[in-house]
Length: 216
Image (tube, rainbow, N blue to C red; front, side, top):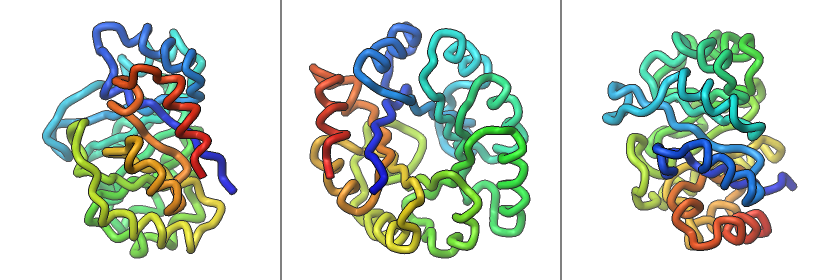
């Protein structure tokens, strides 16, 4: 069984003190943090670029899991890798089916772990033929663009179908993952849990992380 791991989402952190927030993640026991990159085109929000990832890399040894919510993610993949990204996840909706194999090769060439992300209404079964060539798949359980949204329960079917077909593939879930929904997605087969408000707004983030990673 794949071990359960919480990745605090920096989208819910205090951007005025990101160094301190990274230290808080590490002190709580996190091994990685999730970084949402939005381009105001693929999604209606605009967040950070490679220069911020580079600054984060200078002050932490945590794994930097970079999620590119961008219309042209391959254009910037090298920049984010050079800035310090350990894993780079791109959306299948942005890359498209005709160039997916080449896109995976292009991402692999950066040296980062490669992930494929799916919006809540994208059926992953149409993309199963590519899953043997990536390091993780991510299911958005909210529509991407903003933090703090409510979990979309219909996405659980996609998690279960993917876990049944790929028993050893790391499955990440991002959006509305909290004390209520976390046991559900773990039961469905997810093992990489992106938690924003559930982690940063908890009175005891370390306690939340210990609890979450003990759920089976």
